Length: 65
Ligand SMILES: [Zn+2]
Image (tube, rainbow, N blue to C red; front, side, top):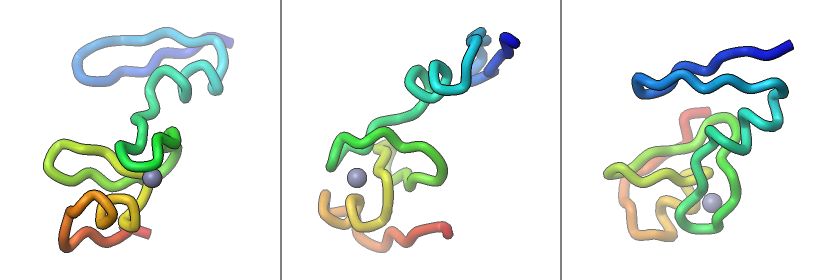
């Protein structure tokens, strides 16, 4: 049941999705929650949503959803 995740030129092998999520998911730089699904990226920083990006002073960020 193992599978590979290709990211940024590297191949990561996982045997469960939760392992992959914990290894691959970025962390919101405002509230520290793990970003699973659609986060927002602003100036190279990751946030779980537009509200956190705005809380960090990133203007003009809107949720993609
Ligand atoms: Zn957040």
